[in-house]
Length: 90
Image: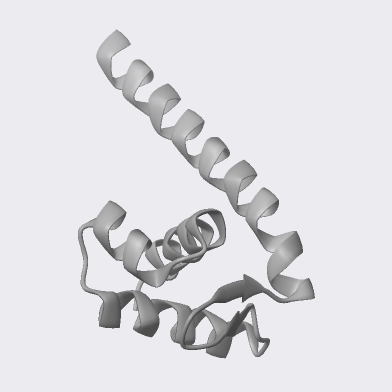
């Protein structure tokens, strides 16, 4: 599983509070969202979300993660824009 996609999926679940909404927003199946979240928790060896049949909420570890992910995605996008600009400028 791609760790960057897993991070994006987690960040979206943290924002929406819903696996179904994330699946719709990212155009993937709900089971795929579940697999990405489970893989990320496994890689980190920590629980990021509390899940019940009706509700998803962030654990303490999960609560501090989304702002860091947003900063990371912003840096990646800026780097890609700079790389693209350098390529065009040649």
